[in-house]
Length: 333
Image (cartoon, rainbow, N blue to C red; front, side, top):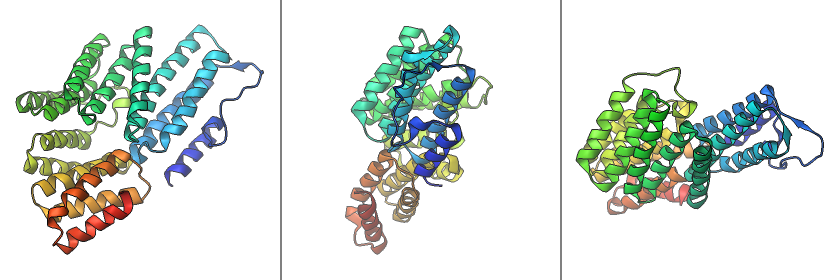
């Protein structure tokens, strides 16, 4: 099942017409009564959107997520509900807003992503929602690295750790925030601070899962944390170490996290070419490209493969390298 079919099937199963490409929030005058059943449906759809992102990426998903968010705001403004349900709706709106920011980030809609992240953070602050603030600041830290603002990334990660302490966040959340901090330090070239943060991430990760783990930290499995460390080592110029970590991560990752595996393979390919390991470069690049050809859409992944393609220029005497560069040009550039 491809991304479009998966999204349509999910919308049909839940009876959520606003996720279709032809419908928007209804504007009729009939009363919209919102109770626990409706809240459960809305939350299930939000979780489905996050799951689809993990497998297929955010390039087309952000439009459907935006419609879902508009519908939730419509219910907040026009619906009839109890105070408790109203709080649930406001919380869902905040979670959807930070998810939408992430989908835009993955689709390289960076200005839009920052707007949604800022809106989600403002919602969290006004509501005193430390969990939403923690998640949003973690997202903002990752984006800041890609925007070339590593000091900002470290600051966001550290502020997120302060919010995490307010709700006594479980270890998996602490691991995520530590590796986000490490990514900022790696981009700054601060090897000591980066390695310290990586060590803290693995220590927290080693404490295991908890029934208090929020859904948004479920992606941080061993494969993903290994990949994120590998990315840090790559940014620090530790190419051989990065190759070992990224290769291990790609072997560990499952199909439900295909977008992350594709990104890992693209990073592996780039690390390998820096290490002048052309066989590994070609194999990883072609495997990452096959995921894209199979329906995984992530502009971040494609941008990383463009870097790989460009880095292959000095090695074009090799027929296999030249063929790989041509494949990348034909499919992503």
